[in-house]
Length: 220
Image 1 (cartoon, rainbow, N blue to C red):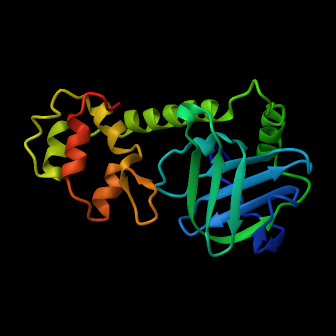
Image 2 (tube, rainbow, N blue to C red):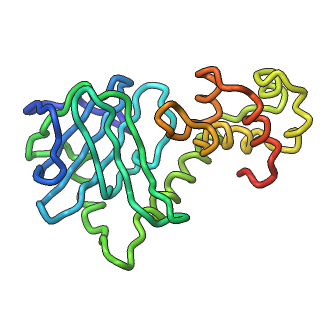
Image 3 (cartoon, one colour):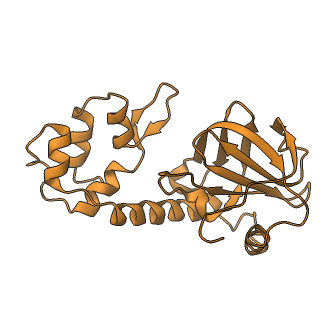
């Protein structure tokens, strides 16, 4: 087993994870094929969450694993993970597709999960540790890696947006991909959560706001 490939989870199935009282290791599998491993070693300890992306899923900060301050996970509902405060005084969050199953993993964790818990278990949650700031750096790194691996040219994007591309012709292919694959506060879904420009266009959003972002020199 390598990368994010995983064996199917085996163990007791539950319908709701109670973050206030549950301890141990759990895996949630979602409609998209993405899985989340959630671990808490003691009642006084933090929750550690790691995401294993499904087919075609873009990178996310949780792929590296990390401590979360809040989680919600129930069968039939999207799971939500959050780190409060920190970077630019904003929360850092992630939401999954609907959860199909939650499984309590056995005590003898696979070596990959055990090594991850050991590596992350010593992360201190105190006044000197800004978890959101650390995770934001991971988010940025993951997005940039995705953009570098999936560049889009001015001509390609201009054709998609039905524009001549002159307002963003100065951008590199990596910059264009980075903007298009980063959730934007001005592009939100019905629940008010930010979408990437790609996702915005996929659900029928207008091209105007996307063109404005691409032309804006303040955008990444």
